[in-house]
Image (cartoon, rainbow, N blue to C red; front, side):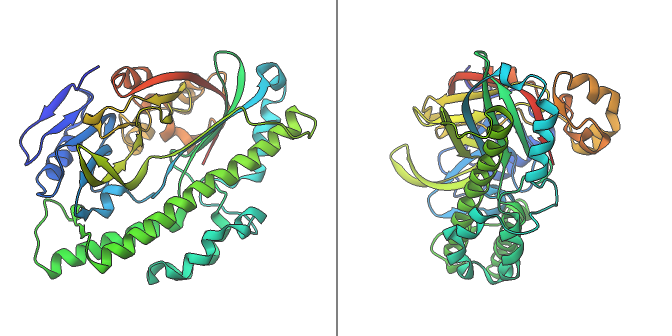
Length: 392
């Protein structure tokens, strides 16, 4: 489908791949469009909803500035998927046991490993920790213990089946507390720069860092480190889950990976678009250049999609990062009951208590419609339906 809606009240157009845009989100988009350094236009994915600083599902570019809050507070958050060589029949009678095994080895929510994993201790990124912003230096020990943990909110780890009954591992997580703390530090730094130079922005969360400043150089160093941490975080959890699958489905024997996809959806990168080198910020969006593999998940009761990018220039070669929320967490808790959660997660081995009620499937947009609204951005490779879902 083509672009559904264009907002023209700002200094640049806002191109939106859906008609389903809440008023708060539209206001945030128009605020971002007022900034003089936004390059070309703003691309808004079909899973768009309001967030801190800018909407989730927003892609914009600039030649000379970065907005830390527009990158997001979970730097490097993203998805990973592994196709195993096993078929669905191997899972028969083992779903509950496999779920509990995963939950035993991978801490969720605010929890962390009692001691850092061996892979965490071997990670080379620790050698650069002392060069991160002074505001996070006290977090070294915590960051080591949290590497290889899921987190909470909409983060999840699933065992899924594709239409050919192949077993997949699918997970969603980011840079944990260290990524949030780095983001918060630099958002505060950007706000301080605006006050120092008496620069007015439409909203304090749109405070920015000019590329040529020492403050921005430090941010780039830190954000790249956090993105690498997030990638390693997913890699460790994949290995831990593959180990559980090995013992439950393959008598402890090693097995080959058939296919693997790993992609960020909260990050900044230097890319060339419309003939110019620009800094592209994707907040709740994946890169979808021609041939790029990507993952677009649904809710804990809906299917997810493995996709391939089509390289649409209007979206800065991007696509959505998921279904996108259609109601806040508080509204979801007030609207639905545990019985609703039971009904909407039938057939899925998962938590069904009030602690995950805010993640109920109907709190999210319809993933099939979201995919249909971006069929000019990605093509579907396959679909995945979870049989096990571990939530934070």
